[in-house]
Image 1 (tube, helix red, strand yellow):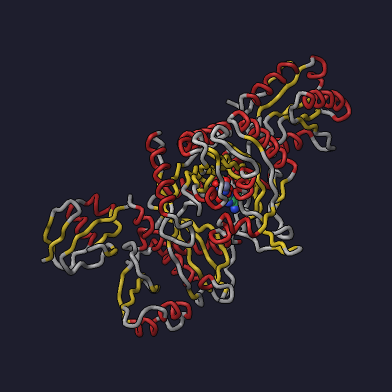
Image 2 (image 1 turned 90 degrees about the horizontal axis):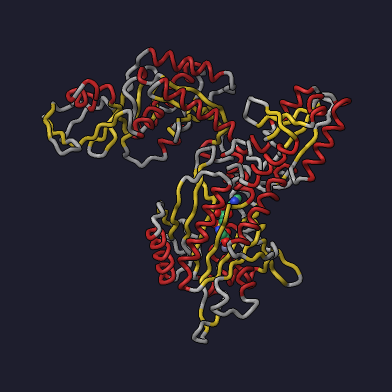
Length: 640
Ligand code: TSB
Ligand code: ZN
């Protein structure tokens, strides 16, 4: 007999060799059905693996995240087995579970085609119906090498393991795979899955090695969960800003221009100008002053600021001319420090809030570039605030609230707020512990005093200080930073900034870096995804589309309306193309234009317009004047 201790502290005796499944079954048949695997003395055990010693156990059920991981890992094996039946020469690389499913890297001996995925899926279903047990066995390294001698990839993987290592294998029917486990008990438990896509992948991620084929899939415990997930995937694809950016003609990326160097098309540029105007007014009301500084600076400038020692990997290489060495700026802070220094400052002048729409360049790894979301040339809604020590908390809070207002005006959803602190990485952060502790505790206090719910991330601070980041979720499901407020005691020291206090002495100001609504690039990606491309009227590149029923008869009235709308500062466009009416209407829909006006006899006779709002079925007929008032009001209120 062995003693089994449960998470609640209870201890029971069982026959030696009992499995997690057996233990779950002894508690209830419901639990047996729900159980997927277990932890035995913290080691992951398959459902049917015999337990031979006294142990503390935790039963993993279908509700646990690990259960999903295990299912998907088993689905990867099931897929490999199916591939092997269809492509007998197939050899296999690695096949892990990933966040929402699994993949397997395969050298099939011939090219697997997109349409083969259906065949593979069918074969997986068949093997599932065969209800084959999935069992674990162990071999010494030499025997494992012998066992897999026909699969050079597995041989390489095994060879990399330490000498004397016991290697675990998982077997199901005619198929055996090298694997650490754990796995589901039988192929019959893998029932609800879908193969999603086929991609190329280099063996061990090395472009000098063999090119394998990677098949992605996803597996779930119920039909309903699978269906739900497939729906999410479909929606995500529709919402991806790269797709919408193309469809709505917002931006263009072309490797001839350079990776991550986006070009703004007329529609995108219009939205950007509207946003710029909006930010300008918002900042004026909040007491900011606007400045403009160059995209180039001397290397020396960034040596003084510390960017050169802490941020160089993110910078493009230097340029030399006439004995001067320049870099493309990755940030505007050093320039703003010099602007502060351009004059004598007294305590009465502070706070000084300098805002700038800053174009800057960062060398981002090419693998991380994602549409407009992460680029190499970007334009930031930036500001640097120069404040006295006694003004820090108020100014940080005001900046934070201004950000919240902007996000609310834009109708965007925040995922969470994050406090980003430093970690022990000396290269990444400046090394004045006193300043770090002061800045970090100030931000912590401020968040606590104002009941601002947040998560804490160590190691994510800027090199010059801690920050409060406002995070949003992208269509691809990952979380990125939208807005930021950063507290900095370092740059004022490096640039020897001072102001004269009311004691007549020189004092050092503190700097607050503020990114209001990110860069135009990232903001556009977020707007596209959160609005699914249907911009609210105040932001829409084209607000009104006029479509004459007949080009001959109705064009001139439509043109009169178009001119009138433009005179009222509305972004109106006339569709005079030689196309069918239905085609033009559909086109306006595809471009998600808020107001679509079809102009015919009825409108001309009565001085009326008939409009259809994007996303609505019904049409409304009102007077021209009322229409203008209606749209202007909507724009003024930002659709709220
Ligand atoms: C706020 N010096 C500060 C500034 O004063 C600064 O540059 N902070 S930052 O490094 O955090 O960048 C500000 C914002 O730019 C980020 O919050 C993020 O929204 C945006 N951003 C950063 N990198 C990229 C990128 N590669 N592509 C698009 N946007 C980016
Ligand atoms: Zn800055």
